[in-house]
Image 1: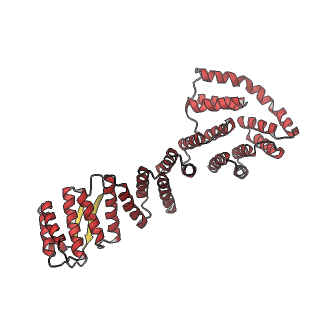
Image 2: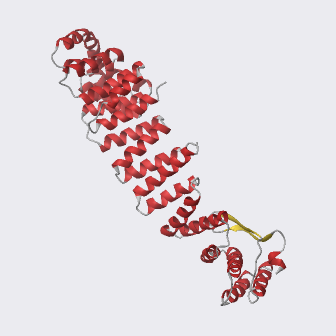
Length: 409
């Protein structure tokens, strides 16, 4: 058997395992093999036929060797490996799987090589849509190699195809966490995929965790808009809540197109904040999102522009009225107006007054107080205010504001 055992390797099998499976260089370092007397000549004959290009003939001989009743583990291992050679040459995926499984079953593969074989088995199973087997094989690889992040992402997609969306999100989070533990940043697509799966299948808890992770890792305008639109669509918000979502979108440059700017400007106008409405209209026009010739824009401008001067002039008197009032309602309305004009320090002071006097929704006030303080640079005060928001769904909105706050310089 010198041809099998000669040189530094028992054999070198380098080939494409399957059309869509990964390439595998399946090589074995030469240990000390002990073949049985009945099997050894058959192995030599099979290898000779392979070297002559007769893969099918080699398989016939290997079937004879496999039929030997008292063959040992080395026999079984080499039969499997030579059969794998022929299977690859014939591009017979079913036989490739059988050969890989046979080689693993002998226990003669070292751990690294067994992982390669199992990865190939998973890829072949995936090619024929056997998701259960693919998942089983890939999970074994991941268990032995927790740093195989890309394979975790592949497993998550398989789980999604099987209708196991919660498991898919968990697996993607596992990949993200494993990469972070290794001091590396996960791909943005992993976060977005986890959020998309959670949103498509309406998984509330998973939507929350994946959206927060996405914004913390990749706080770009597109991600902010996607997350906040999903959040708004999944919750029940009145105009006040919607206004605070739109404010956060604007703070993250996440307003896009006519719809966003027009909705924001119209909502602010309806709530009695002409200054904020005008500011949003002007921004939308300057960015090309709004066209001054369109009827909707003309109507909004006609409704709010004439009110701005008198509204702003009334604020000083409203401040005095707020201080004299027994409740915080006037202080809240005045603070909101100052917020719309970008006078954040005055807004913050009035929001605090509103909380002290009471008679207002504390969660709404603390959300806006946190935003105003964040704009003034008082991050500690802003964080305290936002963390004081406790009622759903504003408590989750406050968490998004906290992520925005953490991104401030």
